[in-house]
Amino acid sequence: MAGAMMMSQAAHAGAAAGGEVVTLSGTSGSPNTSTDTEDTPINALAGWRFYANGDVRRVFASTYTLFNSGTEWNSSTPGIDYWIRATLDSGNAPNTGASSTLNTWHQLVGGAAPTYLAWEWLESRDPVAEFTTAGTLQIDIATDSGGSNIVATGYYRGSATQVGTA
Image (tube, rainbow, N blue to C red; front, side, top):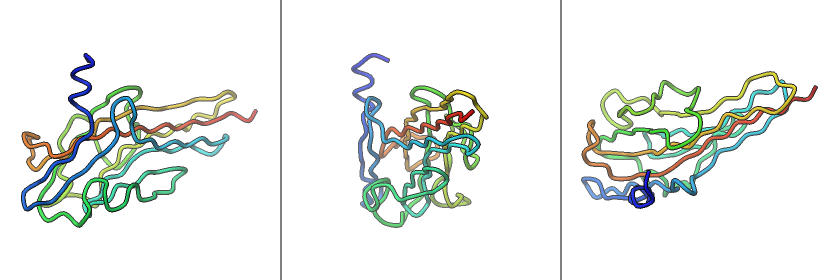
């Protein structure tokens, strides 16, 4: 992408219907990161979960912790329906997670939305050397199922590394 196009896609926040403020952070050049490095035979797992209650959680070594609580995605339990889409910005696509495909609008709040949607990177090879699976996603949140009213965009990176011990 041209530099001007990348700058226009920088992280932003918007006001949704009802005055709710939706905020995502990170840029293509400086994404939010989730990184896990483990020694064989422990699998490395890194990634992101976006919850219907307005929370974002970062995974590190199979532990999910709140990320920028109260400011990232929605500061309160959302009162209207939202959809979320992840697009691969760079690197490897996520290879595990809770049924969250790329380039598809998923209902995040309302209707039959799940409790959360996840995009995660797993490194589970049993290496003699070091292996890394990593990528960066552009996350968009919209107030409609077709994404014509995107209210926030941010960038999130996952990096899972397994180090051989043999």
